[in-house]
Image (cartoon, rainbow, N blue to C red; front, top):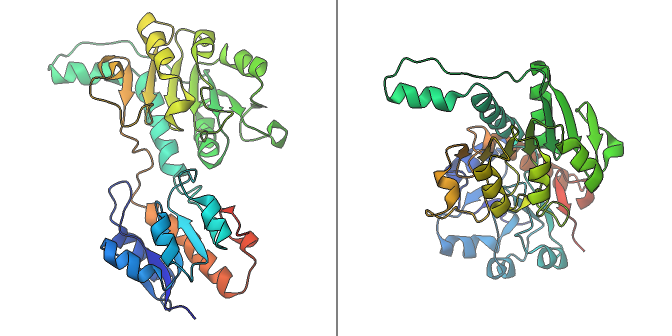
Length: 323
């Protein structure tokens, strides 16, 4: 028996303190020992006793101490930054937080789209000047919306778009699986360009992979209609930044909303800050007051599976099984 069932490392996420994560886990597992390491020293000492460690990351020094570790539970959907090989070699399974951000990120994407469609930026500017003067706005209904990535986030976006009367195109690695969009295509360049040529809103919700890195570059941006709008809540490098700046400046694209950028954080002197047709948010679409509750549901379920002797392959949101 290990002394600690779950160790939560001190770093929170999206400005939400890790203490709230501990509270959510204790609500679900009242008969387990759950600890929060509030200092680097506590992390080092408590890691030696922990069966499950959960946080944004784990460094190799801490991993060296975690002799009893069975599962590292990441608190983000992304896991490319984790020492996956070392974890697997030590017999540690790795899970992620895939799906927990889907409702709130989907809502933020719709906020970007509707604000652009209804030209609310102009409304805000005229309100600030106390200027009662009408302005033109558009309609989302009848538009064609392409969603790149049909994982949990892309699916949630597509589902929320359905009542607006739009045509939807989904882009995914395995188009034969279908999806919640009217049409599903793969990442074949010709198929993607054909879709982009009739896209009014391009919504990017895919992970960063060898396939998606630089997916939207100069050729793709020039293929989009000049009145198209781009939203990126996936990863910054999916869109080639220099090509995006050029397209926005030259009128090849009507506007963009970026929750992720390349580079990130976006430097103070970057030209994207000064473009009036760009909305930038600091990678905060993932923030939600329900974040820890959703993640605690997953981690608590996996602890129960471990107690029942389940194979690591049965863990929810498993991204890497132990070797």
